[in-house]
Image 1 (cartoon, rainbow, N blue to C red):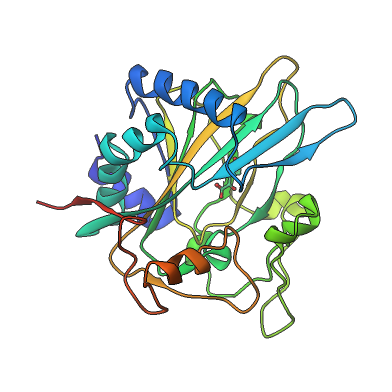
Image 2: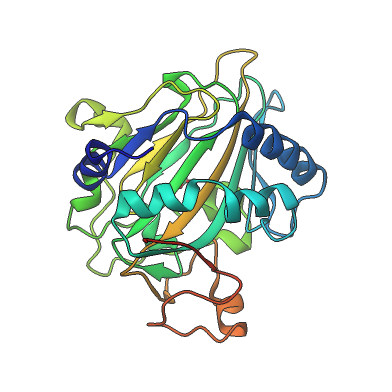
Amino acid sequence: MISSADVESYSRDGVVVVRNAFDHSWIEALRQGIEDNIARPSERGRIWDRDAEGRSCFYDSQVWRQIDAYKDFVLNSPSAEIAGRLMGSASVNFFFDAIFVRTPGAQFRTPWHQDEPYWSVEGFDTCSIWMPLVAVEKKSALEFVRGSHLWTQKFRQTNFGALTNDPRDQVEYRDDGTVEFPDIEATREQYDIVSWEMNPGDCVAFNARIIHGGSGNLSEGRDLKVFNTQWLGDDVRVVFREEGMDPDHSAVMAEYGLSPGDRPGTELYPQVWAAA
Ligand SMILES: O=C(O)CCC(=O)C(=O)O
């Protein structure tokens, strides 16, 4: 399913689209899982955005141990192998699931950001698999600044807490040698931005250091349901950040005996795939 050209693109660009990676049965099961999830959000579930017309973006994460369809997908779908082969890692641990559901016509776009600075882990060998469960137009799909996973500057990220006003989301980047985040949206022509029209079964796989954002901007009557899984490869280790983490795994990691510098493991972050 993963060609050597895919591996090369992933390493060079930090992102690759994989077509027809998942059978329809996975899509159906996850669609049902998302309905169950919206009906019974976890304590981390929240509305990220709601506009004057009531169109909204729902978000939840780390729900895989509560929803059977999610758990089955995490443990038994081709995702872990896709991530492992793209990263060229000897083994792959699951990190967490994230669910983004936009109602028809929602315009809200996720601000440009990188993922790794928010996470309770660090390392180069990461892979997020962003998987729409409905057809998505190119203008509504997640966008990426190609190759930005290799940039060496440490950027001050958006505080997503300012969007949600939720105390759990606050990540306060200080002026501590980090570089101001570029205004990608205002100067789009200066960047090599890529996105793809996608169908259910397709996914984009991306490195947690790549600058990405967007999705949303939906045409009238079009909704967007995304199941996103994050995978950790060989060089990733636990880290707790003074500026905060989102989603913050530090308490639960400590509860399971994980300390900074450890390889993520335990039943929370199971190893799902290993190279033969
Ligand atoms: O789907 C979205 O709007 C955001 C996805 C994203 O930024 C992420 O998973 O890191």
